[in-house]
Image (cartoon, rainbow, N blue to C red; front, side, top):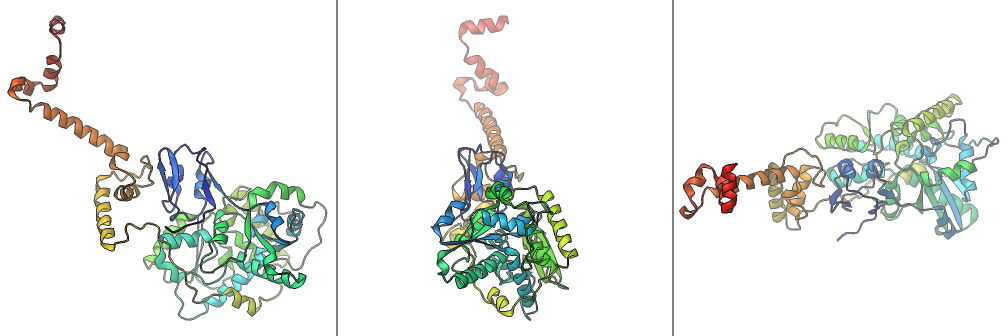
Length: 465
């Protein structure tokens, strides 16, 4: 059996089996069995929707901590653009980065710088003749894993460009090793992440042997400490900071903004992304050049590991971006080097699909099971209520055929079966032999059976009345 790593974990002692997580999971990875949620590892994409919707906080994300910095000789923090959205627009980016360094990092770098390189590489890639269109963004790890699980036929549409955080990590590690004269493997590179999918992407990278990152630290876990460490006095401006083009990647549409005249489509929210993938699979978006897809509503600012309300952080970041543009910081101060673009592009990279539901190793048996699933589904009500512990009626049909559930798990089918059984018992009572007065029973079967069970004294009382 294939092993998977997942950042998203279940806290069984908190789970009450309310089915909220199962109903909101985009890949139907969760079932309720024995009054507790169960996560199917092969289907989980670590999008964090279960964390977002669990009313009892029975889902959590496992990431690294500041204590892990002790393992490495030199540590670099990578600040996501969405981190800036957690703070008031009047707090300079330089101050936020200074606060991170005070938490124990030797150096802080911006993921937005990697986003600038990714934008330039994407523009270059879209000019390539004969590429499969629409090109689908590879920046969001949860969206990519959704494709591998549910839409493997779309892999050839996936952008061959590294995620901005991988680009930023590679540059930061390379520069630190060169400047300090130390081995790259003795440098810890940590991403301050807004989502659990990135932690999974570090330990199970897609399309590469190893991630450029050492690990990730949850944004919400250090927010309080970071807020205390941000200097309140004036921090000198740094001309090397990223432009609005890179910082804007934190918002839905930020990646597509720098693509000029390209025909783009932006989908955010994991179910919207799934719907768009379905449209691409049906061949209905062939006139689109590029699709930006983000699993979290609003973009990375809506990640489940962020600290501030999405709408508040979106407003804050938009105002910050406006101020940057007003200062002439719309695009990078220096053009992105061709060498950096070349390192970010991986034309011809092989990415394997991820089988989510393997009915059987024998294709003939698997086909038979598909027919059984369809037949079982016809007997189910089609309400997708989730009361059975499976998210949909089709999911329950799959579970029944796979032997992990039964039709009586459906409360509506159970009611029908109980009613049918009661009617059958009444019908059977009319088939008594002559020795039990069949003719009388035929007139009033239930009453006759009741009267025949009365004792003689009870019969006399019953007559009197």
